[in-house]
Length: 129
Ligand SMILES: NC(=O)c1ccc[n+]([C@@H]2O[C@H](COP(=O)([O-])OP(=O)(O)OC[C@H]3O[C@@H](n4cnc5c(N)ncnc54)[C@H](O)[C@@H]3O)[C@@H](O)[C@H]2O)c1
Image (cartoon, rainbow, N blue to C red; front, side, top):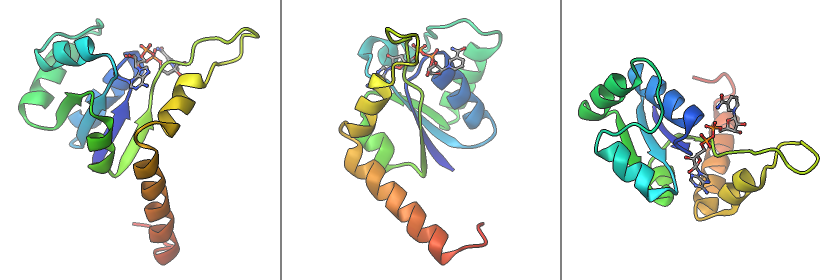
């Protein structure tokens, strides 16, 4: 499947790489251009045993790519995961502002279309895949 992971941090980068490792085509998006440039140059911003080598292999084999272009990524994916930060709010609840911004951001139309397509597909194929 074609997947997009929005937010290439601890969660997004590791899960995106693991999805690629099992054969999916994954685009990791982040709004931190330096991070994306580093990833495209093989520099991994976090330390996890074996991650750097796996990311390099999946990138070289064309299953994993990194971009700041959310619109392109969303429009070329079957499923999108949002993995941006949710720091504690004043009352210690999760601050969902970044995730909500993401949903309302440039990809809004594409995400809405994807949800509508998915719904239409499910109505036509009630027994699933
Ligand atoms: N790290 C963990 O162990 C862990 C465990 C369980 C749940 N979580 C949850 O997973 C989510 C992500 O956590 P994390 O630790 O990976 O965070 P992180 O801060 O390491 O990564 C978040 C990434 O999102 C990017 N980002 C922020 N706004 C963006 C935007 N508008 N568009 C694109 N990219 C954007 C940041 O640049 C950053 O690279 C949070 O909700 C967190 O609570 C994390």
